[in-house]
Length: 357
Ligand code: CP3
Image (cartoon, rainbow, N blue to C red; front, side, top):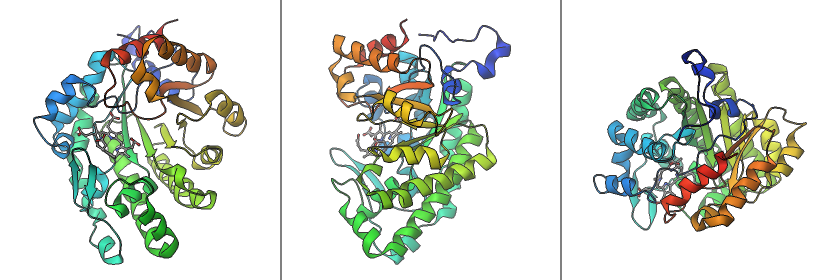
């Protein structure tokens, strides 16, 4: 399906991408749409590729990562194609061991001491992620002209959570304990992640990413002082570093479950687009931030469970979110990733509902 904002002449090409325009602060109607985790196990063609190679191999083989990025675009024609990769590629590229185990998620060698941290080598990152840049340059050539190519990384805090814990966790207790009992070590880990994330994202932009997103999935577990120190400040530094090299590349921030702290996050980090979790009310956040951060785009934020359930209720909810943001810069998305057992036809119905006027 081609968006209504499709280009009418080749000369309009640089401005013909609705998502890129919305990320730059333009109100577009109907809003551009893409979904977090749009490439994933809910797609039969994704599951078919899954039998061929493990997850890391799929991420690091340009042929496979290119195909997996394009699969949802081919099926649904979303406005954005998000690089098929993972936020944990960065610690892996620094030398931390990483496995994805079925039913358990990611497993890493935990970072608990100075010695563990010293074994990581940020200088290896650019070489180790060379295949990811190759994937992006192929995508830049292969995607439809109207599709915006998105790169991404995890934010330092969220990536640190997995690095310290050695995987996922319900409460990231070891990480939060390190913040309290060995702040010098935790600060060094965060600083290492700030510079390597900023460098890696510049590499993604230079390879063809037209916008990049920082996923801070666990931002919401922090109290305000730690939120400022480990979410807002690292994001501000990464944004400043990328802006200096790529002033026109839109930057999307996703401080998930940040509550009212998202206001300060949007004011202080310098991101162009604030991605909202399911709990946020887009119209209310937009009202709250319109004076403080003029030109800020909001992205989101339908509940993935509503997509999973589908039907008329989904159409109504999607159009309610879209209509509430009409006239304001908005990118339609979910408030978190597509759930594993989502019926693929629900995604088709969602994209159609967002685009129907
Ligand atoms: O489609 C896309 O959104 C692009 C690719 C993408 C993946 N992970 C692919 C993936 C993106 C942007 C991510 C981000 C990511 N990864 C986050 C932040 C967003 C969020 O969900 O909060 C986090 C916390 C991770 C870490 C991670 N990766 C976990 C916890 C897991 C295991 C959970 C699971 O679903 O298995 C992964 C694995 C992963 N990353 C898969 C995919 C498609 C599943 C791998 C498989 O095929 O088995």
